Image (cartoon, rainbow, N blue to C red; front, side):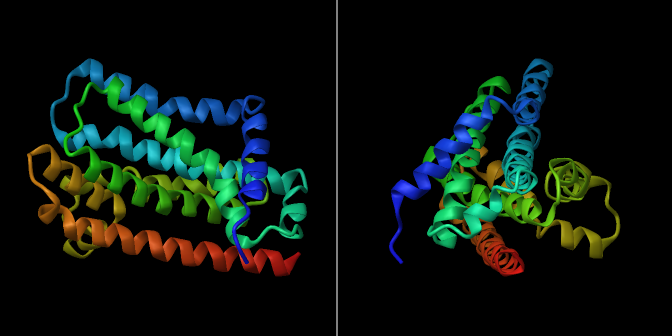
Length: 236
């Protein structure tokens, strides 16, 4: 089946019109920006700390906003219509992810300015962000499909935020080697490592391993998203 831009755009426009009515989403989008502004005021120069607002933007905006929009469709019983519509799985998932993608990019840009950090190697940085966005938005879609209500996405999403968002803050405190190895495999760790390398003037060769690992996470999350979506489609 060929992609229909009209169907994907219709889904995007619907979500865009409903965005202004959703105070939960607007408040959630403001959280990473507030953290970035705080970081900018304290003047922390470490690249690891500068990556935190970006990571939180990916987790909070990418995961929670996407999960909330999917769960809201379920609460309003409008997801059933999408599942039974002529739109393909890819069209629906891309259409439902487009607004989250755009809003998360804006939050990331805002976080960079508010934290007063100059991005080096913009093309490589953009590549890393796009790969991360695929992973985190996919995670949000999965959470939304598994949740029954918007409030439930917050509850089941907290472990996701702790594991994939806040883990870099606690790496130095972990003494167990087995746990440390697991944490070092997380996307947030590879994003922080790539960010640090780019900040120190290194190029693609230094972060190629990080990019490859992030790509594996993104590809795996897409596969799981399609599996969960298809299961929900048949369940209905």
